[in-house]
Length: 370
Image (cartoon, rainbow, N blue to C red; front, top):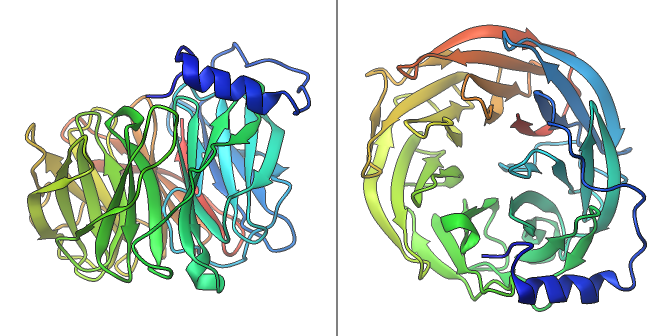
């Protein structure tokens, strides 16, 4: 997969960077702080809200940082509006209202905007990164254009360089996509389509270009958010049936069903995350204001953590989830109550509510945590 040590991608980066200005600082060397990030998604100007996190999981608002673009002021119907690099040094943000993608350096306890570029389509709603390869999902069909994915290289200076011939359509022009993410270390891209009940995959070449779409029927209705394990298992939430399905992802882009649609007996499971140790999966259930936990077996199959499907109570209308890199906490973003609620994860996967913070803007979107 693409990395700074691969000769061909490096050559492309050098070509792409020749005409670009140099940014006056290098990659941060200090450890990135423990923090949670979300977007205000405001029409008047999109901003990243940063919250510091202490050892108990309590959040404190540290600052707001303009992305240089605009939001939509309403839910994006997505997962993944923000993405962190694995080392936690860079943060990517979509600007759905201005069709742009922004990059921030996480510099000490602040964010520094390093680049903003056109997203390669209209209405970007989700972004993912593997090594220095970035792909964004554009839900253009919702605004009179077409749905697609488009790729970029992230340079060491925090600049985005478009990958030539990387833009690919989904299975249709207006399929209501929800999320894009890498699997298998960056060798395959995955996209969920809510309107068509399909899961798309794209094999990624060594030069970073995505191949044509491979579209697979979803096990259940309205596949929405998903999480991908390091072993190549994909865990997909299904909104209409409020369920979770699991698949095995193969290098040729094919998906093999492991656990068919497993209802959590709640309402509107729309977002899915994995615990850091990948032993548990969680869905946020928007219409029942709950989180459901699932045990993940070594073969990728899942079973309910609680027979009722109730693992934790959120605030009103959770619309995203995030887990911390240290494996201790899960956070839910709750749009109607304008809060972020934190839960401590027990060794058995159960969640204990430990914090909440309010005063968030209306229409916010995206949630990532360190």
